View 1 (tube, rainbow, N blue to C red):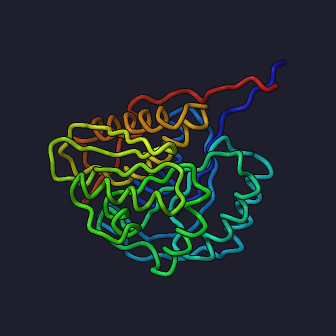
View 2: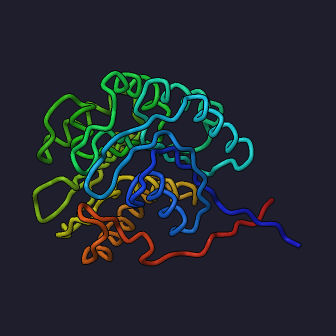
Length: 277
């Protein structure tokens, strides 16, 4: 009898009890796109669609053991990193992933929630820049997060281009700066790739409050397509198309009293089977 394996994606991220963002959104995305999701919990935010009420830390030893245990058993085809809000978390993740440098890493620098709540400790930013950005194959900041990393206001397309160039000098391989916070009818995101080529992606803005978790979803989708051996441009393009449709097909619903979730399962795929060698 033939043996198969599912292409798998590991998410290293924080919790969201509302099911809209964080590790829950990641698992939904990875599953909807036909890959097998594994996970490591980094933090326990107490939140709903209206905002973050508190954040409880996960012991560093628990994060390290989760990570080692998953990696020794189900080696992922790609890794997505989300909420890492302390220097100690950055250290333990980097130490482990440096042993697996062949696996593509997508880092979504989660610093500001949809509600505007700051999610990261100030001293963590320098450690992220020093240690985590260089091991990531792509980072996916939104405009607020790019402003924090580049230490400048990011409000226009010109601002976005300057911010991307500043962040690229910090050692990033590829940067996708998301334009979802633009106050225009056309949303433009910018990708600066490893060869310093710019690529822009444009989508019509969908008028809806249901965008909670869109950043988590996009970074997970990009990780999925990298796991499926798409090149970086293809992974970014396909990931953005998935998020656009997930927002589109969830735009007219109401879940909770605040910023609602995407419809991750607008077109779910069966788990993909790869024949083992």
